[in-house]
Length: 350
Image (cartoon, rainbow, N blue to C red; front, side, top):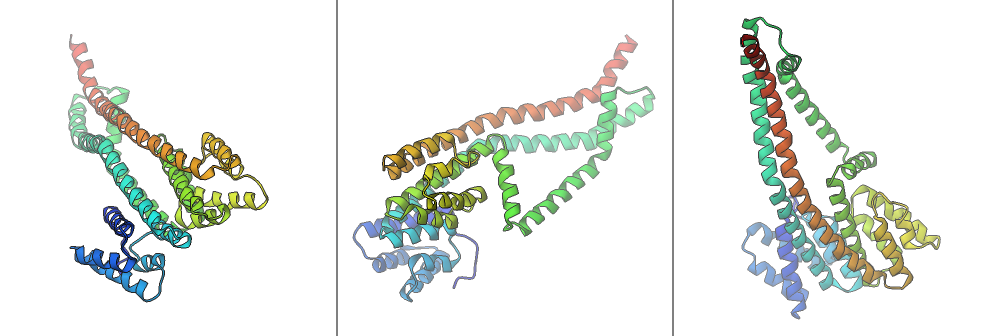
Protein backbone atom coordinates (compact mmCIF):
# COMPACT_ATOMS: atom_id res chain seq x y z
CA UNK A 1 0.00 0.00 0.00
CA UNK A 2 1.23 3.51 -0.85
CA UNK A 3 2.21 5.28 2.35
CA UNK A 4 2.17 8.82 1.01
CA UNK A 5 -1.22 10.18 2.03
CA UNK A 6 -0.92 13.38 0.01
CA UNK A 7 -3.82 13.50 -2.48
CA UNK A 8 -3.08 13.42 -6.19
CA UNK A 9 -3.22 16.75 -8.03
CA UNK A 10 -6.51 17.53 -9.72
CA UNK A 11 -4.83 17.88 -13.13
CA UNK A 12 -3.45 14.34 -12.79
CA UNK A 13 -6.84 13.02 -11.70
CA UNK A 14 -8.54 14.66 -14.68
CA UNK A 15 -6.02 13.13 -17.08
CA UNK A 16 -6.23 9.68 -15.46
CA UNK A 17 -10.03 9.49 -15.45
CA UNK A 18 -10.28 10.93 -18.95
CA UNK A 19 -7.78 8.47 -20.45
CA UNK A 20 -9.31 5.48 -18.64
CA UNK A 21 -12.76 6.50 -19.85
CA UNK A 22 -11.51 6.85 -23.44
CA UNK A 23 -9.90 3.41 -23.37
CA UNK A 24 -12.95 1.67 -21.88
CA UNK A 25 -15.38 3.31 -24.32
CA UNK A 26 -13.08 2.31 -27.19
CA UNK A 27 -13.89 -1.32 -26.43
CA UNK A 28 -10.86 -2.38 -24.39
CA UNK A 29 -11.37 -4.37 -21.21
CA UNK A 30 -10.28 -3.01 -17.86
CA UNK A 31 -7.09 -5.07 -17.61
CA UNK A 32 -5.81 -4.05 -21.03
CA UNK A 33 -6.79 -0.40 -20.45
CA UNK A 34 -4.98 -0.19 -17.13
CA UNK A 35 -1.84 -1.86 -18.50
CA UNK A 36 -1.78 0.70 -21.32
CA UNK A 37 -2.06 3.52 -18.79
CA UNK A 38 0.87 2.09 -16.83
CA UNK A 39 3.03 1.68 -19.94
CA UNK A 40 2.32 5.19 -21.24
CA UNK A 41 2.80 6.98 -17.92
CA UNK A 42 6.15 8.80 -17.82
CA UNK A 43 6.10 10.03 -14.23
CA UNK A 44 7.50 7.36 -11.94
CA UNK A 45 5.30 8.26 -8.96
CA UNK A 46 2.09 7.99 -10.99
CA UNK A 47 3.27 4.76 -12.61
CA UNK A 48 3.84 3.20 -9.19
CA UNK A 49 0.41 4.38 -8.08
CA UNK A 50 -1.26 2.79 -11.12
CA UNK A 51 0.61 -0.45 -10.50
CA UNK A 52 -0.59 -0.49 -6.89
CA UNK A 53 -4.20 0.06 -7.95
CA UNK A 54 -4.00 -2.58 -10.68
CA UNK A 55 -2.44 -5.12 -8.31
CA UNK A 56 -5.16 -4.42 -5.76
CA UNK A 57 -7.90 -5.04 -8.37
CA UNK A 58 -6.22 -8.28 -9.46
CA UNK A 59 -6.06 -9.34 -5.80
CA UNK A 60 -9.86 -9.19 -5.63
CA UNK A 61 -10.67 -5.69 -4.41
CA UNK A 62 -13.25 -3.57 -6.21
CA UNK A 63 -12.10 -0.56 -8.22
CA UNK A 64 -13.30 2.00 -5.68
CA UNK A 65 -11.70 0.01 -2.82
CA UNK A 66 -8.43 -0.09 -4.74
CA UNK A 67 -8.51 3.66 -5.29
CA UNK A 68 -9.33 4.22 -1.61
CA UNK A 69 -6.48 1.95 -0.46
CA UNK A 70 -4.00 4.05 -2.41
CA UNK A 71 -4.86 7.06 -0.20
CA UNK A 72 -4.33 9.33 -3.18
CA UNK A 73 -8.02 9.91 -3.94
CA UNK A 74 -10.69 11.62 -1.86
CA UNK A 75 -14.21 10.53 -0.89
CA UNK A 76 -15.74 12.03 -4.04
CA UNK A 77 -13.56 9.93 -6.36
CA UNK A 78 -14.13 6.68 -4.50
CA UNK A 79 -17.83 7.39 -4.01
CA UNK A 80 -18.50 8.07 -7.69
CA UNK A 81 -16.52 4.96 -8.71
CA UNK A 82 -18.57 2.97 -6.22
CA UNK A 83 -21.74 4.32 -7.82
CA UNK A 84 -20.47 3.32 -11.26
CA UNK A 85 -19.65 -0.21 -10.10
CA UNK A 86 -22.97 -0.72 -8.29
CA UNK A 87 -24.98 0.48 -11.29
CA UNK A 88 -22.82 -1.05 -14.02
CA UNK A 89 -22.05 2.39 -15.49
CA UNK A 90 -18.37 2.71 -14.70
CA UNK A 91 -17.64 4.52 -17.99
CA UNK A 92 -20.19 7.22 -17.13
CA UNK A 93 -18.72 7.54 -13.64
CA UNK A 94 -15.24 8.05 -15.11
CA UNK A 95 -16.60 10.61 -17.59
CA UNK A 96 -18.30 12.45 -14.74
CA UNK A 97 -15.06 12.60 -12.72
CA UNK A 98 -13.03 13.76 -15.72
CA UNK A 99 -15.57 16.50 -16.49
CA UNK A 100 -15.82 17.45 -12.81
CA UNK A 101 -12.07 17.97 -12.43
CA UNK A 102 -11.78 19.72 -15.77
CA UNK A 103 -14.36 22.27 -14.64
CA UNK A 104 -12.73 22.53 -11.21
CA UNK A 105 -9.42 23.40 -12.86
CA UNK A 106 -11.13 25.97 -15.08
CA UNK A 107 -12.87 27.53 -12.09
CA UNK A 108 -9.62 27.62 -10.12
CA UNK A 109 -7.89 29.38 -12.99
CA UNK A 110 -10.78 31.81 -13.19
CA UNK A 111 -10.54 32.53 -9.46
CA UNK A 112 -6.77 32.89 -9.71
CA UNK A 113 -7.08 35.33 -12.61
CA UNK A 114 -9.78 37.33 -10.83
CA UNK A 115 -8.09 37.51 -7.42
CA UNK A 116 -4.34 37.47 -8.15
CA UNK A 117 -4.03 41.09 -9.32
CA UNK A 118 -6.11 42.59 -6.47
CA UNK A 119 -4.25 40.36 -4.01
CA UNK A 120 -0.85 41.60 -5.24
CA UNK A 121 -2.08 45.18 -4.89
CA UNK A 122 -3.40 44.48 -1.40
CA UNK A 123 -0.19 42.84 -0.15
CA UNK A 124 2.01 45.57 -1.64
CA UNK A 125 -0.17 48.32 -0.19
CA UNK A 126 -0.26 46.69 3.25
CA UNK A 127 3.53 46.39 3.26
CA UNK A 128 3.79 50.08 2.35
CA UNK A 129 1.22 50.96 5.03
CA UNK A 130 3.08 49.01 7.73
CA UNK A 131 6.35 50.65 6.65
CA UNK A 132 4.77 54.09 6.88
CA UNK A 133 3.26 53.46 10.31
CA UNK A 134 6.36 51.85 11.83
CA UNK A 135 9.10 53.96 10.18
CA UNK A 136 7.78 57.20 8.67
CA UNK A 137 5.33 58.14 11.43
CA UNK A 138 7.99 57.95 14.21
CA UNK A 139 10.17 60.29 12.15
CA UNK A 140 7.34 62.82 11.94
CA UNK A 141 6.71 62.34 15.66
CA UNK A 142 10.26 63.36 16.53
CA UNK A 143 9.90 66.52 14.43
CA UNK A 144 6.60 67.45 16.07
CA UNK A 145 8.03 66.81 19.55
CA UNK A 146 10.75 69.39 18.87
CA UNK A 147 8.10 71.87 17.69
CA UNK A 148 6.32 71.54 21.01
CA UNK A 149 2.93 72.56 19.63
CA UNK A 150 -0.34 70.73 20.22
CA UNK A 151 -1.08 68.14 17.53
CA UNK A 152 -4.47 67.54 15.88
CA UNK A 153 -6.59 64.70 17.23
CA UNK A 154 -6.14 62.53 14.10
CA UNK A 155 -2.34 62.92 14.19
CA UNK A 156 -2.23 61.93 17.86
CA UNK A 157 -4.29 58.81 17.17
CA UNK A 158 -2.00 57.74 14.31
CA UNK A 159 1.08 58.26 16.50
CA UNK A 160 -0.43 56.14 19.29
CA UNK A 161 -1.31 53.45 16.76
CA UNK A 162 2.28 53.56 15.44
CA UNK A 163 3.66 52.96 18.92
CA UNK A 164 1.36 49.97 19.41
CA UNK A 165 1.86 48.56 15.89
CA UNK A 166 4.48 45.88 16.80
CA UNK A 167 2.25 44.57 19.60
CA UNK A 168 -0.78 44.60 17.28
CA UNK A 169 1.06 42.67 14.56
CA UNK A 170 2.38 40.18 17.11
CA UNK A 171 -1.08 39.71 18.62
CA UNK A 172 -2.76 39.24 15.23
CA UNK A 173 -0.09 36.78 14.09
CA UNK A 174 -0.11 34.79 17.32
CA UNK A 175 -3.90 34.78 17.53
CA UNK A 176 -4.23 33.68 13.90
CA UNK A 177 -1.76 30.83 14.40
CA UNK A 178 -3.48 29.74 17.61
CA UNK A 179 -6.97 29.77 16.10
CA UNK A 180 -5.70 27.97 13.00
CA UNK A 181 -4.07 25.24 15.10
CA UNK A 182 -7.24 24.79 17.17
CA UNK A 183 -9.44 24.49 14.12
CA UNK A 184 -7.00 22.05 12.52
CA UNK A 185 -6.84 19.98 15.70
CA UNK A 186 -10.65 19.77 15.97
CA UNK A 187 -11.47 19.94 12.25
CA UNK A 188 -13.39 16.65 12.36
CA UNK A 189 -15.60 17.80 15.23
CA UNK A 190 -19.17 18.48 14.10
CA UNK A 191 -19.42 21.69 16.14
CA UNK A 192 -16.25 23.10 14.53
CA UNK A 193 -17.41 22.09 11.04
CA UNK A 194 -20.80 23.69 11.65
CA UNK A 195 -19.17 26.91 12.89
CA UNK A 196 -16.81 27.14 9.91
CA UNK A 197 -19.61 26.43 7.44
CA UNK A 198 -21.83 29.07 9.04
CA UNK A 199 -19.07 31.67 8.81
CA UNK A 200 -18.25 30.82 5.18
CA UNK A 201 -21.88 30.90 4.05
CA UNK A 202 -22.42 34.33 5.61
CA UNK A 203 -19.42 35.96 3.91
CA UNK A 204 -20.45 38.51 1.27
CA UNK A 205 -20.10 37.18 -2.30
CA UNK A 206 -17.98 34.24 -1.15
CA UNK A 207 -20.95 32.64 0.62
CA UNK A 208 -23.04 32.82 -2.57
CA UNK A 209 -20.21 31.25 -4.58
CA UNK A 210 -19.88 28.37 -2.09
CA UNK A 211 -23.66 27.81 -2.14
CA UNK A 212 -23.73 27.65 -5.95
CA UNK A 213 -20.77 25.28 -6.01
CA UNK A 214 -22.24 22.88 -3.44
CA UNK A 215 -25.70 22.91 -5.04
CA UNK A 216 -24.21 22.23 -8.48
CA UNK A 217 -22.23 19.27 -7.07
CA UNK A 218 -25.35 17.99 -5.29
CA UNK A 219 -27.50 18.12 -8.45
CA UNK A 220 -24.91 16.50 -10.71
CA UNK A 221 -24.02 13.71 -8.30
CA UNK A 222 -27.65 12.94 -7.47
CA UNK A 223 -28.49 12.97 -11.19
CA UNK A 224 -25.69 10.45 -11.78
CA UNK A 225 -27.01 8.24 -8.99
CA UNK A 226 -30.74 8.51 -9.61
CA UNK A 227 -30.33 8.34 -13.38
CA UNK A 228 -28.37 5.12 -12.95
CA UNK A 229 -31.30 3.45 -11.20
CA UNK A 230 -30.22 3.93 -7.58
CA UNK A 231 -33.25 4.54 -5.31
CA UNK A 232 -33.45 8.12 -4.14
CA UNK A 233 -33.15 7.23 -0.47
CA UNK A 234 -30.06 5.11 -1.06
CA UNK A 235 -28.61 7.84 -3.27
CA UNK A 236 -28.86 10.34 -0.42
CA UNK A 237 -27.07 7.89 1.90
CA UNK A 238 -24.25 7.58 -0.63
CA UNK A 239 -24.01 11.37 -0.95
CA UNK A 240 -23.30 11.66 2.79
CA UNK A 241 -19.91 10.02 2.13
CA UNK A 242 -19.17 12.13 -0.97
CA UNK A 243 -20.28 15.70 -0.18
CA UNK A 244 -18.53 16.46 3.10
CA UNK A 245 -19.50 20.14 3.53
CA UNK A 246 -21.26 19.97 6.90
CA UNK A 247 -24.67 21.67 6.27
CA UNK A 248 -25.32 19.62 3.14
CA UNK A 249 -24.16 16.36 4.69
CA UNK A 250 -26.52 16.93 7.62
CA UNK A 251 -29.41 17.83 5.33
CA UNK A 252 -29.24 14.49 3.52
CA UNK A 253 -30.20 12.61 6.68
CA UNK A 254 -33.19 14.89 7.32
CA UNK A 255 -34.37 14.67 3.70
CA UNK A 256 -34.01 10.89 3.91
CA UNK A 257 -36.27 10.81 6.97
CA UNK A 258 -38.81 12.91 5.04
CA UNK A 259 -38.80 10.32 2.25
CA UNK A 260 -39.22 7.44 4.72
CA UNK A 261 -42.34 9.14 6.08
CA UNK A 262 -43.75 9.35 2.58
CA UNK A 263 -43.00 13.03 2.03
CA UNK A 264 -41.70 14.69 -1.10
CA UNK A 265 -38.00 15.01 -1.82
CA UNK A 266 -38.32 18.72 -2.69
CA UNK A 267 -40.25 19.34 0.53
CA UNK A 268 -37.32 17.96 2.51
CA UNK A 269 -34.88 20.26 0.70
CA UNK A 270 -37.16 23.25 1.35
CA UNK A 271 -36.57 22.78 5.08
CA UNK A 272 -33.03 24.13 4.53
CA UNK A 273 -33.55 27.50 2.79
CA UNK A 274 -30.09 28.70 3.84
CA UNK A 275 -28.34 26.10 1.63
CA UNK A 276 -30.95 25.25 -1.04
CA UNK A 277 -32.39 28.08 -3.12
CA UNK A 278 -36.18 28.40 -3.29
CA UNK A 279 -36.03 28.28 -7.09
CA UNK A 280 -34.10 24.99 -7.00
CA UNK A 281 -36.62 23.41 -4.60
CA UNK A 282 -39.56 24.57 -6.73
CA UNK A 283 -38.11 23.19 -9.97
CA UNK A 284 -37.13 19.88 -8.37
CA UNK A 285 -40.66 19.60 -7.00
CA UNK A 286 -41.99 19.98 -10.55
CA UNK A 287 -39.57 17.33 -11.79
CA UNK A 288 -40.54 15.02 -8.95
CA UNK A 289 -44.27 15.39 -9.58
CA UNK A 290 -43.90 14.86 -13.35
CA UNK A 291 -41.52 11.90 -12.91
CA UNK A 292 -38.66 13.82 -14.60
CA UNK A 293 -36.50 14.37 -11.53
CA UNK A 294 -33.32 13.06 -13.15
CA UNK A 295 -33.61 15.42 -16.13
CA UNK A 296 -34.41 18.36 -13.87
CA UNK A 297 -31.38 17.61 -11.68
CA UNK A 298 -29.15 17.58 -14.75
CA UNK A 299 -30.52 20.89 -16.04
CA UNK A 300 -30.21 22.56 -12.66
CA UNK A 301 -26.68 21.27 -12.24
CA UNK A 302 -25.65 22.84 -15.57
CA UNK A 303 -27.49 26.07 -14.78
CA UNK A 304 -25.91 26.38 -11.34
CA UNK A 305 -22.47 25.79 -12.85
CA UNK A 306 -23.05 28.63 -15.32
CA UNK A 307 -24.24 30.89 -12.49
CA UNK A 308 -21.15 29.92 -10.48
CA UNK A 309 -18.84 30.96 -13.31
CA UNK A 310 -20.73 34.26 -13.61
CA UNK A 311 -20.39 34.84 -9.84
CA UNK A 312 -16.66 34.21 -10.02
CA UNK A 313 -16.29 36.84 -12.73
CA UNK A 314 -18.34 39.26 -10.63
CA UNK A 315 -16.14 38.52 -7.62
CA UNK A 316 -13.02 39.50 -9.55
CA UNK A 317 -14.63 42.67 -10.92
CA UNK A 318 -15.80 43.65 -7.43
CA UNK A 319 -12.62 42.90 -5.48
CA UNK A 320 -10.18 44.91 -7.58
CA UNK A 321 -11.70 48.41 -7.16
CA UNK A 322 -12.77 47.77 -3.56
CA UNK A 323 -9.28 46.73 -2.48
CA UNK A 324 -7.62 49.57 -4.36
CA UNK A 325 -9.98 52.17 -2.89
CA UNK A 326 -9.84 50.70 0.62
CA UNK A 327 -6.07 50.47 0.87
CA UNK A 328 -5.63 53.79 -0.94
CA UNK A 329 -7.95 55.40 1.58
CA UNK A 330 -5.90 54.05 4.51
CA UNK A 331 -2.64 55.32 3.02
CA UNK A 332 -4.23 58.71 2.33
CA UNK A 333 -5.50 58.85 5.93
CA UNK A 334 -2.00 58.32 7.32
CA UNK A 335 -0.50 60.94 4.99
CA UNK A 336 -3.16 63.51 5.85
CA UNK A 337 -2.70 62.86 9.57
CA UNK A 338 1.07 63.38 9.30
CA UNK A 339 0.93 66.54 7.18
CA UNK A 340 -2.02 68.14 8.96
CA UNK A 341 0.17 69.84 11.63
CA UNK A 342 2.31 71.33 8.85
CA UNK A 343 -0.78 72.74 7.17
CA UNK A 344 -1.88 74.30 10.46
CA UNK A 345 1.63 75.68 11.03
CA UNK A 346 1.69 77.19 7.56
CA UNK A 347 -1.68 78.79 8.16
CA UNK A 348 -0.50 80.25 11.47
CA UNK A 349 2.64 81.71 9.84
CA UNK A 350 0.52 83.20 7.03
